[in-house]
Image 1 (cartoon, rainbow, N blue to C red):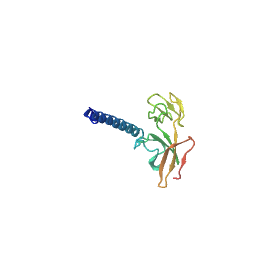
Image 2 (tube, rainbow, N blue to C red):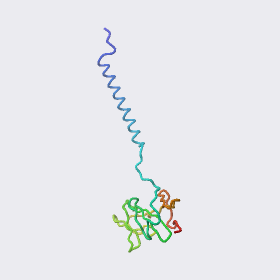
Image 3 (cartoon, helix red, strand yellow):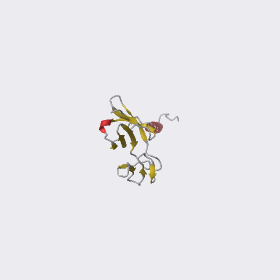
Image 4 (cartoon, rainbow, N blue to C red):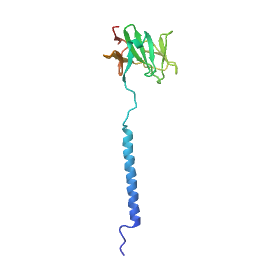
Length: 154
């Protein structure tokens, strides 16, 4: 007696293998898509922060960017407000002329050098330039030495 090649058992077995192969393929595709996202949710590293007139002389904090704009007469510098130890936001202490981290007690000199605490690295100074419209343009991708300033004729 010859059995029918396409019995119910064979049909269901093939459907099961096809479903398993489809699930494995879908999982593989989803895993590859997960490793390469379409969108990056990082803020831009180059941005405008206003004009010189927006920042009086002294140390000014820009909270949305976590930076300090240090202005003295017609010179401008921009320093990161993020502690190099664990990423807390440092605070400028005018009376002591330095930055302090409220989380773990790190202290940074007015030049951004780590002088006390668990932080070992200095606060980075960012390149700042002026656009043709007169806006200050900060580039966090370019770390500059403390001595580099932007001079603007006012």
